[in-house]
Image (cartoon, rainbow, N blue to C red; front, top):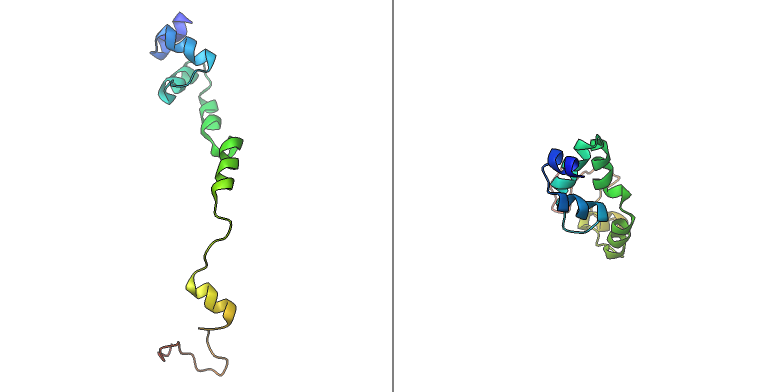
Length: 97
């Protein structure tokens, strides 16, 4: 443990706290330890939000249940604001395209 602390630039007590899983250990310290151990690729897995089931569930719960549509989408649903089928391509203001 002392060698790991020395090589990662952390104190032995920090390494002990990291091993116990205590909160408050900086992500930089964790990255340094993973690099020393040859496990740098694991850091990518740890910070990938797709692996955070709790975070994803909380995000899904906080999303709005019903969103608002844009005005253009509402017009399309009602059939308004479109190009007429007669070949007169103009908008509501009479401007031809």
